[in-house]
Length: 442
View 1 (spheres, rainbow, N blue to C red):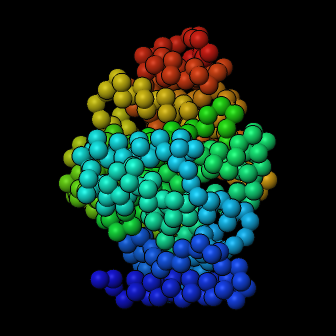
View 2 (view 1 turned 180 degrees about the vertical axis):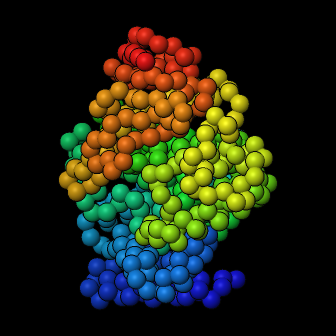
View 3 (view 1 turned 45 degrees about the horizontal axis):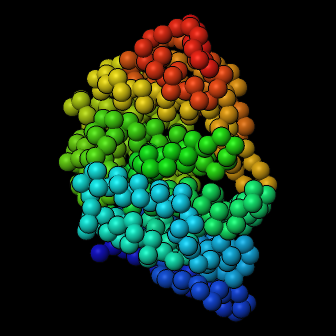
């Protein structure tokens, strides 16, 4: 049963939804196929939100954002009979014409099965025991999104009017119909939501790490969520900042246990370690209290303390008194897992790809495309990170961790994006000189 502050969150959410729907009814703009379900926050998020609201005195920007603005946008997105929302969210889906989205859902169920989560476990995580059953329960985009982790209280990312208008224009110019537009531009946002799994699962705390693990899993299921294909701009901006933390947690404790715990099929303390779980929860709440960001996450542009925490806890090092400042200074050379050539090459390739992303605003929507960096990719051999020059809408220098075995004091010069795998292999081997489409210099 929820505690009193959580019941107050539920009551406020219900009042906002009722008021928003009453307005649509009065104005005769309620869509005839609207799914007027009871709005609900995920259990772990609701607990964090209630705690933050209590800390803030129950009013202010956080209350306005999560108990007023977001639920009203969600109601309008899925229930208002207005263009372009109605045309996109309530169109009857022919899943045979959504190959990219259907394949990503297949891969997500495959990841669950590989982690030992199938049948009833998969049904608890995603609301259906198989990909086929999930699609059968999803005749429209509205019905699919409404069941997702945040779909009960917040609008779909990149599902606002400006986004949808942009997608439909771009799709039309490429000769794509509505199904083609959905498959190309809304696969990443929907799969991102699905990778949060069930609304009532016991998510790891802080919610920052839940977002990081979800981002890592989604990039594993749909790489283009983080790294768009050539000529495309449908990735979710800044995904690698979060996903690299999830990657480190999986690197430290194993992909299978991480996915099983994230899906709610394993207890986090057994999948990782009790020390990691306790330290993460403490550090996350302390960080929020110190900075109080509206998004309730920790500093998205500061992944290194969380990476160091995962590695240190996996090695059995004491973390009960760890601080984010201390973890930030902890060398990955001292805590990272032992070298694994294949795994290390994969991490380095992902890090190099993260340096090849350009965010920009086009027609009122935030887009991300793959592009060669504005300068050489620098390898910091002490901190075990790669960086590249800021550009576009970046507010910080792009940064991604790499395994210590690949951390040599060099610069990587890319001439082609398809040279990244070879460049990653050369970097891991400690090579210096010219390669096919890249060069490594001291």
